[in-house]
Image (cartoon, rainbow, N blue to C red):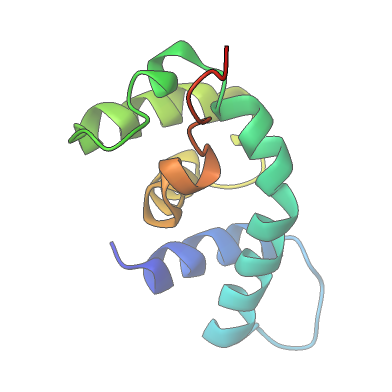
Length: 110
């Protein structure tokens, strides 16, 4: 799915319980999803980056995206499953970049 499609799915979930005179536009849904995602980055980083199954996928080597997606769904399910569709959030993290979320530390200076 494209980033726009994922943001629509997440935005729809985030805005589903809001009361209003009219439905939100696709642009409003995507904007809500972007704001929420950016606000969650530090929590996502803390939850994801230390997980052993994610750590082994960090770095320049080729990664099995399906394996990473599966691990992300497992990791994020209990924390975010009641808020947003976890598969969409996991796919959005893949679009964002696991290496960007969890930058590899440099070599040990010792």
